[in-house]
Image (tube, rainbow, N blue to C red):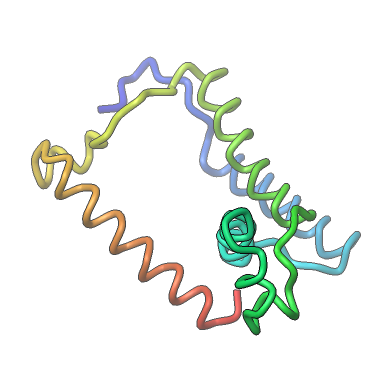
Length: 132
């Protein structure tokens, strides 16, 4: 559980900064940032290693060639920014089961993994359905 001495970022400050970055992104590049397309492209890049011919025949990858571009770098930046933020605030922890989950559902890692995977699939399906 979070203690009184935790020095995590204020969610209001982090949200405001993210909003400013989004506004600047649209203003400067004319593009909204997102993550779901990056996951699909990353899967395409990984699959290209094993079967470039197969990926080249897929309708989606004919119009959207899987490559590292600004959106992929944005998602990588989310990871790096989170890592930097959590290490500088000394809140970084390796935990398979978050405290909040454990308090409510118990310490079972497999149950947490299954629910997280299913939740991720539902969120990705919704994002892709909305063309996100």
